[in-house]
Image (cartoon, rainbow, N blue to C red; front, side):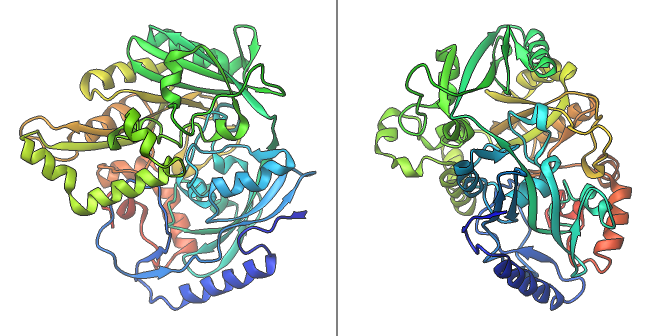
Length: 463
């Protein structure tokens, strides 16, 4: 292994940090809720009042080692993908799946799921993990692998959201890269044709005679959708585009049919404007854009502004003063079979009315495995659809009106909904959808005293 000095930098320092966390957890009385003392979060799920014990995760970020020959990296659980990519790129390597936002942590992407335009061939981030050290709720530090004593925890950890334990160290697969990614933005005026073209590109890893390494899409309306196909490139025919300053990436999808980005800029193409959500803060207005410091054009800046608004209630007060109707946050990622994608998009546009919508295909990489807390049909191509914003509530309706309808429509189409944001399922339905029996067995084995929250309590009751 080639050691990379980043964060704590050594296995000895990691062992000391792991020992400290074990001791801190052992001091927590049974039944007392436990949280990680994270500085950043990409969850949109509100929490109840702060209570219980907080584990200090200082010293738990950084890349311990990169092995260029084996194409693996040993990474601490609180390492952001920005830090991880910066450590692997000098070796001509990158994580097999790099979620869209810089500050998503590796541990968070594995326990809470993540996705990107390589997921049609690589699956989700947890499918690229070779082993992980997990601090379990009962205070043990176990190494979970696809085979062996803790196989059940390895398979049950994804979508557990810290209710079984915390990933302190993960060994992940890396992939070779090239300097550039060439893009084709293919327009469609029919959502059924759009979905079939996405399936074709994923099934054949080619489209219209050219190879395809990355696939995602942007739906501006039922009559305007774009399939974006990325292909590795050793050279660029012209200067690569720069969407980290005055230009906005998602607008370029409508404006040009081909493009080229450096690999690093491709990985973070959605981060600069938090997809398109930066417009809510005025960051896409030309005058504001020129005054906004370039280093603050990034998702964690907007996240801090969201948190500030939640604490102060500023936007709600402004709406009331204007006499505007109350609004509901609809911040969700859902997955439906590719054959149901057009149907869901038409329903969503008519009934909820948020635009644009991000579309990203995914397929389980190893069909022989079952990930019980977020089980897919392993032979099926799904499409993740992401929509993030607020919607006016009809008169007489309260918070949850739109989100509950989304949940019902996703269930009708045999899909799944990610749990990083608000959920409104009743308990029986939730347990049936998210591996309730498997979760109960894992909870009994790895957290029998209930030091960590129950999954339903955490994701729906918002404890």
